[in-house]
Length: 64
Image (cartoon, rainbow, N blue to C red):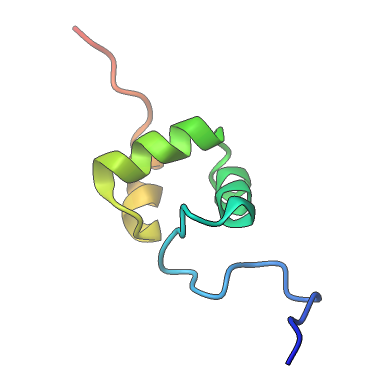
């Protein structure tokens, strides 16, 4: 059975699969961040998209 190329999103929208280059690119674009920023966020809060949304919504941390 072949892939349905009309579907552009990831099969599991609840988590980011960092081992797939196209998913890293998809989620980087979806969150409006670079792949490096996405990698750091996944390392900090995990691969669940809800946690990543909260992380990116909070904005950058500023050292005081």
